[in-house]
Length: 150
Image: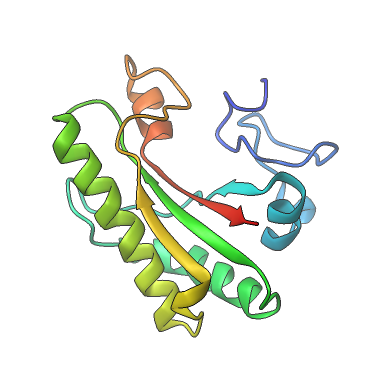
């Protein structure tokens, strides 16, 4: 499956992946390495309650790993991007994606990451990575990404 269409679109070249395009646990690459190579990463496993900016408890493990990684790289600044799928009005999706990005930023700050290192922005449905005509496509479009700010 081509990168960008699979469930883990920012896996670095050469990493062994499963049938969904995600790294095998033994081949997991540190977040900071992915960010330094690709300048962006989708935070798989970060999910919210339906139509809310409330982080689901299962998301905290991923975000704790992100915070731990960022503590070792104090010179790295990031944009936290929120994205939505197509259902809903443009205005609603833009607001929801902004609130979700802010929730991720707030959580990372609560884990000791300086707020000055993080910018939270929402992009609504303006940057899809898959079609919105299937449930799987909409799921891929509902995401949070980290992007290095240079």
